[in-house]
Each structure stands twice: as C-alpha cells, then as structure tokens.
Length: 472
Image (cartoon, rainbow, N blue to C red):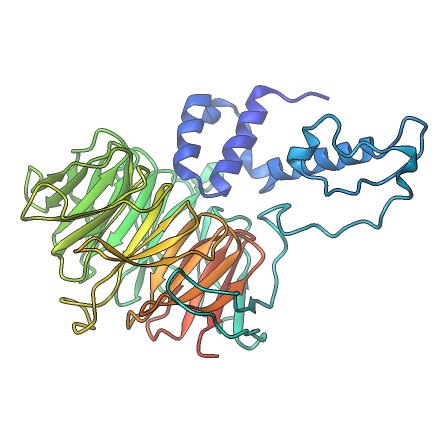
C-alpha cells in the first residue's frame, strides 16, 4: 500500500475547500498543480482526509492498547490526534486493567458529525463583557426546521428551499462541455431584493442566474478565475461580481452581458459591495480598496491603510461610510471626503473575517436607531462598535472558535452570530446580553435572518441548514 504526493495534495486541497478556507485552497491548488493530477474528484467522498486521519488514530489507539506481554488495556486519558503523535501516549501496561466500554465520538472529533432534527438553545453562565445572563431554553422540533441534502458544505449544487417545502429545487452547476458530466463548486450566491432571482458564482469563473423556481435563465462568462463575491444592486438591474482574476464586473442582467470590467487590483478580488445603483467598492489580497463607478474609466477613490489582505467591505445604509476588515486584525471606516480612515478599530487580537452594519440610522428603514458596526474575528469574539467615534460598545465573547458570520435582525435590535464551535448565538444589540444559544452538530459558516426578524437560518458543516424560530 502506498500514497502518492498527488493523492495527498488532492486530499489536502479538498479538505481546505470543504472547510471553507477558499483562499488557502486556491493558493495550495495552484502551487501543487492539483488540476493536472488527473484525479477524478467525483469518485472521492467528502471528508476523505478527515476519515483517513480518524482511522489512523483508531489504529494507533488499538496498537498502543496492547502491552508488551500481550494483554489488552485501555488508556485512562482520551486519545486524540495530538496524543497519537506522542510516541508514549496511551501505551498500555499489564496493570491498567480491562479495556473500558467504547466511547461515542465526541463533538471535538470532527466538524462533520451527523445531523440532528433537534437543536438545543441553552443559556450560558453569562453573556458578554457588558450584559447579563439569559434564561435556559430548549427548542422543540416544531421550532426548528432542518433542511438536509447537500453532499458537502461546498458541493456543486445550490438549493432553493422554502422552510415548509418537502423537496428543494436543486440547481446543478454543470460545465459548459456537458459531455464531461462534471459540475463546478459553488462559492457564493445572492438573492435579488424582490426574491425573484438568485445569482450564484462558482469555481469555474462563471456566474449563473436562476429563477425562483430553479430555472437557469442566464450564464455569465467573462471571469478567468473563481468568483468569490456576487451582489445585486437595489433595483435588480445590475449584478456585480468579484473574482480571483483580480477584476470586478458589472453585468446587465436583462442582456446577460458585460457592461464594464474593472481591473485595478494587483491580486485576487475578495469582496465587492454596491454603494448605490451604479457605484461600488472592491477589496483584495493586495490590501487595497477601490471605489468605482459605471461609465468611469478610472476609479473614484483608492483607500490604503490595511497591512494585510482585506477580507470584506460594507457600505452603511446611507452610502456615506465604508467599513473594511482585514487579516491585520483591524477594521476601518472610510469616507469619500477623505483619504485616511475615519476610524481605526484595533481591539481584535486575530484576523477579522467579516463585518456588518446595523440596518439603522440615516438611509435605513430604522432612521431613528443608532448606527453600529459588528465585527467577527478568528479570536472567537464579536465586537459592536460606535464606528464613527471608534468606541467599542460591547464585546461578545461566548464563542470558543473562530466566528465566520454575523447578521442583524431587520429592526437592528438583535445580532445573530455563527462559529465553528457549532453554536448560533443571538445577542441584544442594546446591552450586549446573550439572549439564546442554539447548538447544532457542525461548524457554522453562515447565518441569516428572515425579513420579519422572527427566524434565523444557520448553515452547518454537517451538510444541513437549520431554521430556528426566535419567537419562542
């Protein structure tokens, strides 16, 4: 038995891709020439690298449970990947006694555990650095709808599903050469404001537009690399895309054609966001942020100041303030009226993965509410900022692993957060207190509220989506 370097590289690439490390996967895939390995990925099940590692650990555990005299004994300490690398860990001695009963797999063994039709909501012993505790709650099956069916977090299908539907619409992303029978990984998606059309971006560099009933209405082909960000403008007339090919494109949706391609970045474009109907911002691994406008050959503004790649950008509801977050552990707020940042938010201790403005203040549906900014970091915390003054209002610190997603309710009163610790937390924006905690059986990549602010959906790494009714 043997394993080639190509096979190992492919498994590592698949692990990075399935776990959501899309930038790392792209870089590793390019450097290791995975695409030239002639390995048929369709025949390799999701999570194969994790499966091999777990089986290796089981073998090590069995091997080390046999003492020198041939007797079998169990270790009194839990056996894990790091303990398996210790040459003496778990080695049995004749005096250790009979082996214990076989344990069920713990939550920490894998982020790809089995799904559950029941999600527990429990109060923690505290909430944030500024709030009180929450009451203990357990949701029933009537309060949680679990949508299953994806083969992996990043399989090659998008699914459009209403919570009460028994069968989803499956959106197959086939390559242009249908004879190949191969499909392409979906990397991003976005609904238009009316909910009548869904745009998806994929690793083959194509954007696709689907009707609400799941019919493919257009395929947009211009990018030369994976698409990492897609955004509809407010009217639904234009679609904006950002790609690894270092460009952003504004598409005429009706004609399924390119209106303008913007090529100012020197490295992959990671995120794009509309400012208004025809102007937008883009960010990149080149640490730069550009503000561009349809019909203009040059950018309107260039923001410099981050010291590492910029992961996400968001305009506030008024279009006056642009927030950005970076691997340099900072978030910044920018204005078109000045070149330097308005606020430099430096309290996180690790990379900031995403940011969100509250749907409050000028330009929003809640103009009397206070405008705040939420930042989610790999330091396991969320911070709520008065972004214009640079003051941190609340530190939300109950997650145990990196936080990948945050979302405000429509009225701006609550914030949902999802982490790889398998927990979805719902917080009070007013005082930072923890209101509810929902624990699933996989890491959470994305959370989103419905328009009424009564339900939260969470996308778990065990191939399920849970829709939680927050009113109970």
